Amino acid sequence: MAPKTIYRVDYRELIKRLRDRREELGLSQSEIARALGWPQQRLSAVEAGARRLDIIEFFQLTSALGLTAQRAVRLVLHAPKSK
Image (cartoon, rainbow, N blue to C red; front, side, top):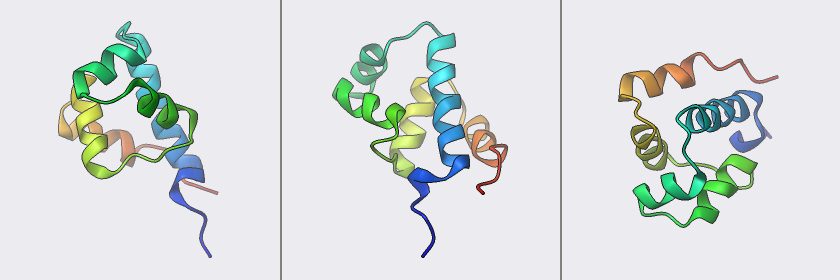
């Protein structure tokens, strides 16, 4: 059976890139979560690898991070391949 996507190298790299973007913008988890209407714990769990983003959440988060849908998709397409 294939491993769950949450454990794949490319998924972890994608989450790292999103966290790096948030930090580059100088935003806390609480600030982003508030903008999204999420509990801060949800974003913390995503960044820690304990919770997987669904596609809608992914685009909500990337939008809150100031990324266009096109740039968000590029983050996925340019992540290293899973081993």
